[in-house]
Image 1 (spheres, rainbow, N blue to C red):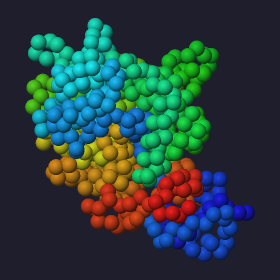
Image 2 (cartoon, helix red, strand yellow; image 1 turned 90 degrees about the horizontal axis):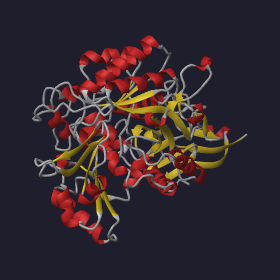
Image 3 (cartoon, rainbow, N blue to C red; image 1 turned 135 degrees about the horizontal axis):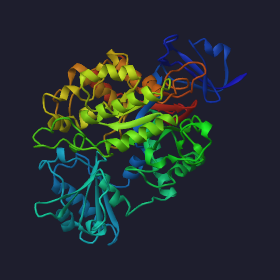
Image 4 (cartoon, one colour; image 1 turned 60 degrees about the horizontal axis):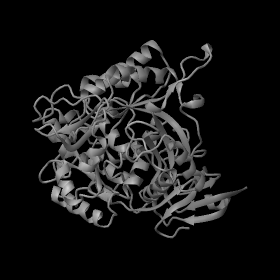
Length: 546
């Protein structure tokens, strides 16, 4: 038998306890078929032989919670991230420049601003945007995805429309909208450009895929498609299928369908609950490149936007305890219906009140309608009291925190929580010490989603200002690597084909310029990604291996 490829002279860190290291790896049909030392070349024939030159190799990185399509779309928008944006004036200048190059009447859209990083520590106003782009509709997307700012032309378009539950159109002291729109109220703005065309979505998927491969990402979970807060089109699934058909989907994707896209279907009384997509489709449908995973549910907002549902008010925020995006009783009904229909339920919960509420609902699911190995998830699990950690373990719930938040938005989270609550935020070590699985994820485009940057923050626990976040939650680099490989695979029920390099597993791996497991911890984020292999094929190559 001739194998497809033989990768020689590498230093493979396999993440497989039965064979933790290897020097050579052979592939066939996109899978690993053999590992061994250099002598493997004497017994294996392959159509293509690649000499890795002694470089270090790890399994492909897997982002357990991201928004690849959203990120790809944002790459067309004005970049408002800080740096380089330092002030509201900087943002206005960038919008003015784009407006000057855009025909009047069209949209000027910016993405990635964070008021916490601006010297004024506030959002731009509609009036300020009017001054620099009076003949364009302006839409600034906050980096959290939980709020946006628009100008007066957009406010006029949505004037008089009912504000959706779980959202707020913010007003000034005179009762007039000031341009800031929170949470579910953003749907009023999205409707003005909705739905996005399949062609544009496919192009965005392709752009983002290329960047992901350059960063070593071979798999990702898309956290919310088809409906709800992050919807791009009611036929969004078709765009993913089309991207796969054209070969522009470069990474393997696990789709979390928005719960708003599910509905109760008529069915035989013997078939139990059927809360699903049309045709009765639930999680697991698809293949190793593109599959439907769980269902995504929103419970609350964000910490840096101070909209997460908290038990106590945000620091310096008067009596603001945030709020639920979904009424708790409706949240309960949706989760119960999804659980009874066999879905893996993946609920966004950041504030401690939201996390506690979701855990109570998951407990009710298992008490009244027990199912084995549900692996229900809490996306972000931003603030969780120590007393609830054992409940997470007992229920088999998987928390999905984002290590990269620590650096990029950690200062804003600390300001929102205060000294006494920050130790409960974005835990890592606390989960691992209790045997709770820990996936690796970014929530991109909220932050820079490069996995090595995420691992750097998981290990170092420092904010962008250099301040410590929660040093007690720091974990070793080996644990951070496991999170982005085996941990993320387990969180998606894919540990049988991803996360490790072993015979029968997908041949997805990353060639690095340094040994990730021994590099100085301050340099983790700077380790070069030299090549990315997906299904045994070189998908990204800076060295010329191919």
